Image 1: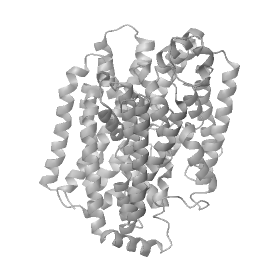
Image 2: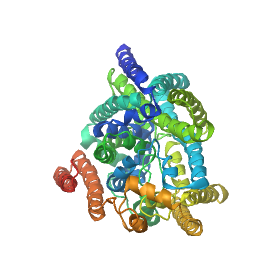
Image 3: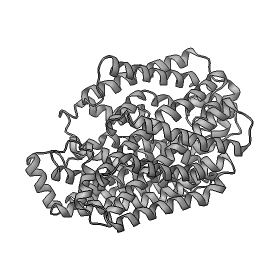
Image 4: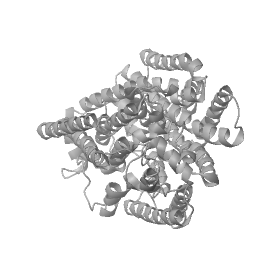
Length: 580
């Protein structure tokens, strides 16, 4: 189906609104680094949390989910569903600690927590490593997804269309920083989710309702297919027992991945820094995890199943999402969906660029190149760095083939680093060399196994072995390095403890020197809330799925239990003087 005037009006209206928001906040964002990168540290929880969700809802996400479902059924989403366990860990153990630091970026944390030259080396290295190669790989796969969408939907030069999207994004992200990006994120998330829900409804109707969809899947794949299973068939070719154990017992805490960093980090930490209070930082992260894992996936999954029924022999399974869109939507709704994809694309690009630029400027340029300049100078450099990062990301796109393949590559090179990111908050002995050795070891082991010995992250057994081997070696190395290197200077440890006052036995020696500081208590209750939190997510996720797929009664029971768990968490936080 071709676009008509109403589609183009909807698309144009979206771009105009995005630009106007960016221009409105550009003057306020130019006052200081705190305004440009943290929106003045004054965001309410619902806006910060929705911004997190919008950032992880890129143009690549529905396409990648479609590919996972087409390859392995609904259970294929366990590649990322397992991260909900780690996400809830961040909510109850780390969100308040991050807010207390008062820093601009999570990389700045290194010189707050560690001391001396090793801390400076770590800060500079991570700033360049994450802001340039890693951030540009992420941006590259997001741009790759948008390229696929536009090639199918418009049948025009995709580079030109992407250039328009990037140009608009660049204008408001470079001018308004996080102030403009967060406000745009809220609108973009509403448009993107509304568009995907509409697409799922039209798609199911096109194949004769849910009963018609089930009949088509049975016809295409046989009555004994496992496409609708929420849990993987352990021992099947795509989910050997080793891979399942890695997903459930290892990946969510051991592997660094953008948006699901163990203990929080990246743009999730950036949004926590931007919140008004510790309460807002906790609620923002809680809302993000519930919306990200429990509420958002089902429209994508339904469209993915329709794509399997309508295009069972498609060469590019990820592109099935867009093929369904063009096949089932009437005019007007096509424009809405393209605007939705543009919204998802632009929100992620704007956030990733703002996040990467904050590292480059605050933790490299300001720290090591030009230490004493005006705030307006650093904002100008930030805007120039934004343009530079966009150009590099476009170049990286040319070297990527699949979205899920890029996901898995980042997972493997970050395997084993999670332990140090979790324990650095609760064990005083962790130092800068712990992090340095973990990052280097993970990269070397993962790269050697993949490029030296031919292990493939696309092969489930080899992926499991990659993750397990890299995690074990990396963990052993960083613990050994920690014990063999000098501890952090005592003054640095005391200053850090006074600022963040974490609980647990790992700070016993330092706590004894700060009798006037009240440490966090209630880690046992945090642990119970954590279990209740990820149980809530999975019960809500599967309950909603059951209702959609026809299992109304068990679905309602699951959702009711999830609601009770939510009420328990709310009660517990209030009981512990958290005004939630």
